[in-house]
Image 1 (cartoon, rainbow, N blue to C red):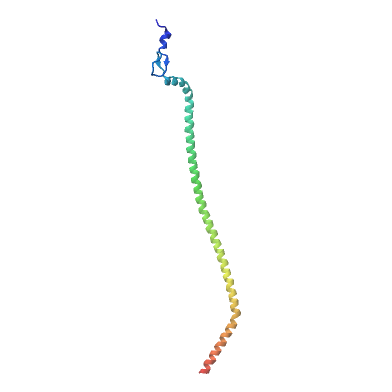
Image 2 (cartoon, one colour):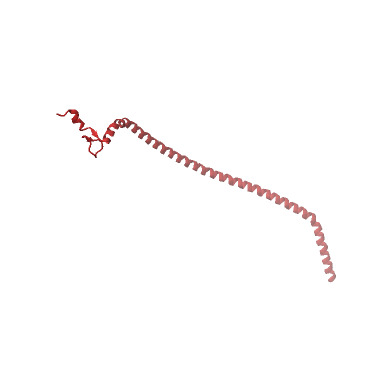
Length: 147
């Protein structure tokens, strides 16, 4: 009669299927590994769930930060537009003030030049009037003699 050990040896895992070997069932390494790692995976299940929660929270935080960044960028752009309008208005005001100042200076310079020209004209006018009178006197005398 066969001993119990001999009967159980027939079910002992052997190598991969193929060439004949000592009697037994083919080894199922995948099942052995799965059974061996099942306990580890069971222990890690809570950690895996926690990791998923952390990833989801991180994705939510990232999306919220991105949305906040977009909102801040839009606010900065809007502020820049308002500042740009104010800056343009200030520059136009300054340019007009400078143009008015330059125009005033040009008018003052023109008035000074006109005054100087009048003074020179007044200084030489009597001499020119005297010359014209003398010429007219000569012309009138010549006309009077020829008549």
